[in-house]
Each structure stands twice: as C-alpha cells, then as structure tokens.
Amino acid sequence: MDFNEDQIQRYSRHILLQDVGVEGQEKISNGKVLIIGAGGLGAPVALYLAAAGVGTIGIIDGDVVDLSNLQRQVIHFTPDVNKAKVLSAKEKINLINPDVEVITYYDLLTASNAFEIIKDYDFVVDGTDNFPVKFLINDACVMAGKPFSHGGILRFDGQTITVVPGTACYRCVFHAPPPANAVPTCSQAGVLGAIAGMLGTIQAAEVLKYLTGVGNLLTNRLLTFNAKTMDFRTIKVKHNSKCQVCGDHPTITELIDYEQATCELKTNN
Amino acid sequence: MSAILVNDKVQEIEAPISLIDLIKLNNVEQPEMVSIQVNGEFVARENFESTLINADDEVDFLYFMGGGSR
Image (cartoon, rainbow over all chains, first blue to last red; front, side):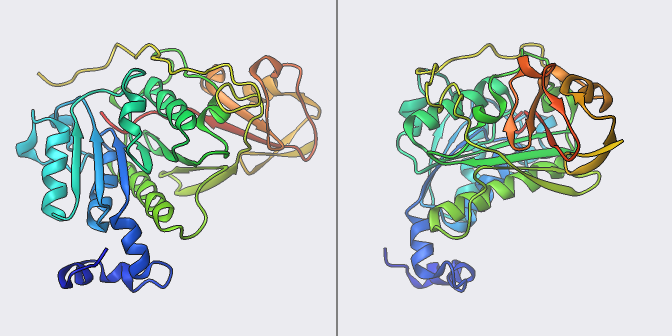
C-alpha cells in the first residue's frame, strides 16, 4: 500500500513510533475488524480504530439510539436519537476518516449468522451488553480460530481479556452464562459513563497491537479495574483443559443461542 | 491466624477454611455467580465446599461483568 501525502500526515504520529512505522501503519490500513455492539464499548473502539485508519470496520447492532445511551456512547449525538446505531456510527467513522470502509449489519448476532459474519475479519471486538452474546462470540471465535477482545463494564468496574487461538478463552474463566437476570446489565444497574471509554480504549489498543504485532497482548490475563479506587489488577488465568469449548474434550461443538434476559428496565417513553 | 491473599490483598484467616466459608467471610454478593481460582487453578463449583484454603494460598474471585452496548 502506498500512502499519499495526506495519509502520511494523518498517520504521522503512528509512523513516528519506532515499533509501528510505515510498515505498521500499512498493517493497520489493511486490517479488518468487526465490532459487535455499537454502544458504550463499541463507540470508543470504533472512534479510535477509525482515527487509526483501520481499513475495514464492520459494525453489528440491532438497536436504535436512545436518549439514555448518550451519557456514554460517545459516537452517537443528540440528533441521532431513534437512528439505527450502526448508521449513526458509520456516519461518524466516515467523518473522522474517509479512508475507512464501513460495513454495517443492522441485526443481532445469533448462532445462525455468527460464523458467516465473523469469517471476513481479522479480529473481533465484543462490545455487547449481555452474557448470551458474550458466550456466543467466544464460542464462535474459538471455533473459527478468530482472535477477539472480551470487554465488560458494570457500575464502576470494567474487565477485559484478549483471546487468540490457544490462549485461555472467556469460557475457560467463566464456564457458562449466569441465569438470565442473575447478574444485572448496565441497563439495569447503571454504569459510570467514562468507564466505557476507559475499557473501550484498552480494547482498541489491543486491536492495534494485534494488527501491528507490537507488544504483548492481554492474553491469559484478565484485566479488571475499579474506578472508585482506580485500582487496576491483572489476574493470570490459564487455558482450562476442562473448558467445554477449547479444552481437551470439548462438549460444545456448535453455537448456542442462550436465553436472553427479558426484563430490561425502560426509562424512556 | 494465617495470612492468605484474596484478590491480591492480604487476609487473615483461621486456616484451614473451606472455599465456601471464605466466600461467606468475604460477603460475596452472589456466590453462585463468582468464578474462583486458587493458586492459579480454577475450582469447579461443585468443589467449593471440599476445597480447603491454607496459609499463603492465593485466591482470586472473578465476577461476571456484562454491559457495553445498551
């Protein structure tokens, strides 16, 4: 890929980095990344990947922008309320960086479309808000050999882990989804808006590290933080030989649509 | 009293203590929702009662965290 003058200027702060350089920026510009969920986590991920010049960004989300989203989903603006989140996100990405090709899926990720959607991408970012989909993303990526970043936020806390083929997966750590509504989601328990940015930008950095091959990914380590204390912890986790999807004798060999939490609190209308 | 590490913080306990009692001692909100590592190895839920924690053991409580999109 030959960068023109504008592109060299646009990406100069990456190119200046010894570990990245023109070669690394080329890898970023050739990268294809799928963001699942254009919400609290997907917003900062999409904004930073767009700015970084990731060549193709796929975004899947079946929701429209709600007024209650704007407190943290910084890719959506007030006039976007009631607009499809994928469309709102695509508009901002293209405004930030017209070099980026954006592919939108105004849909939910399910067991029946997951493989078909993720197959075209180099890396998948989980920015979803519920456990059925988090486990679906994990299982689909593990089975398809796709690297991905798990992210979760709640109240004042965040957690993230990067999974590449052979490293501890989300299911190695958390085994199976909790019963529907046993663990509240942000829409039920609340979340400090800036937490989404803190965690999403960590995920975006992991994507850029993966694409450029720079540094050590957050694999076999679960990063957690609490914004009340600003304590960050990295907990070593091991690939679990008894893991149902990536262990020695996997019992899960096809994708599962777990039951979704149903009693979401609606505060609008 | 014996010192153990719970989520990187020193905790004094009467060793040995079962994992299930340690969960109670730490007021874990939803014990059925926590994933636990002892000295870097995951403990299956059905072994929470039979697993004994001794001095110098390192225990990690890992919590489910959803959130992100909506």
